Length: 153
Image 1 (cartoon, helix red, strand yellow):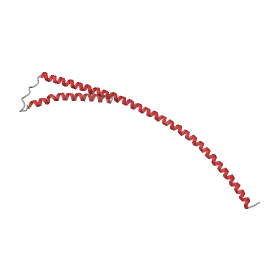
Image 2 (cartoon, one colour):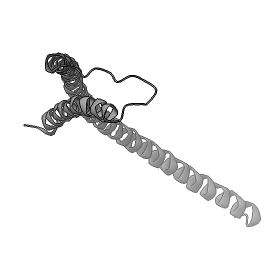
Image 3 (cartoon, one colour):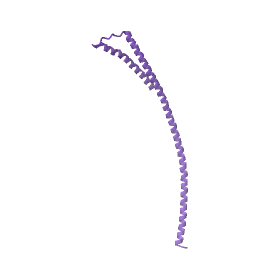
Image 4 (cartoon, helix red, strand yellow):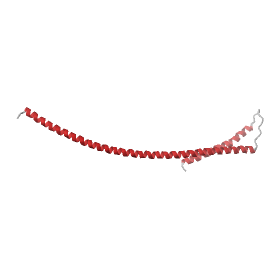
């Protein structure tokens, strides 16, 4: 049995014990009041055994009804707790699936970004090589022209 079942059993046992204590206390409290009658009121006739048994029977029926109501409420709450636990498990499974999907999208984006970066690096290298060659050629041409102007042949 799981912890929830033991909790329900303990709760029902507590309610039954409380009902029994109340049923036992009511006649005792009345008996205590009857021991010292008030001087201003006439002595009440003591209830017969049948009347007390009838009251006890009524109290026991009432406590049994209350125990059944509490038990039904506890059962309903147990069902609701199980449903909530199932929903929580479903939510955890969905979150795990979403996490897997997020990781898959992350890997896909990373691979696409790396491919784009490699292409961009190749273009940048090619453009810088072109600029370097053009600078060298124009620099050499300018050097030749300046040398010819300064020292004509």
